Amino acid sequence: MLAHAVEQIVGEGNQGQEAAEPWTAPHRTSPGPWQRSPEIIHAIGWKGTALVLWHDCQIEKAENQERSRLEKMFAAVAPILPLDELQSKTAEDAEELRRGVRNGEHHSYFYLPKTSVGEFSMRDSYVNLRYIWSVRQVTLLPARKLSLAPEMLPSLYSTLFVFFTRYRLDMDPLCPKCGVSVPLVPALDTDDDGGPF
Image 1: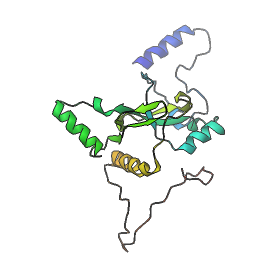
Image 2 (image 1 turned 180 degrees about the vertical axis):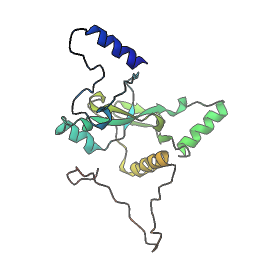
Image 3 (image 1 turned 90 degrees about the horizontal axis):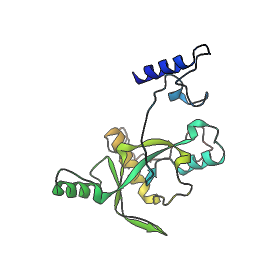
Image 4 (image 1 turned 30 degrees about the horizontal axis):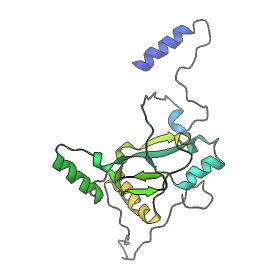
């Protein structure tokens, strides 16, 4: 209804002129989702701490050499929120929920322990995976505050896998036919220069 009403307003305002396209993609070379019948989505956002879910090389490529490639201009982020503000029906339920987040029992949350680096400090927190959002990389601050330690990455990957599929990722998978362990190796994108991700 809203799109139809705005189309009519735009059309009436241009009487005698060439009809304007009220809902067009921002760029003619936009990636697939915006090429046909785009939807107008109004969203309210605020600046805050977030976990960037793209690999470093995807961010650096966009910064260094691929700014003109629109699909490389975006990054997925998920908000980081203070764990002590996570609420439930009762105080006891809220404390039980927080304990479960710390222990990795809730697949929609990824626990981050308190940390401090230089002037930046963060109390016990969690990443809410229900609110993953794609944002333009220019909205990210120029300098990251922290990076996950390499030993935490498998835990994040496992949490993301379970969140999206509701299956557990076996870190030591066995071949069902021969019983030999199948090592997990990094996957490569077809447009990569050879580095993982």
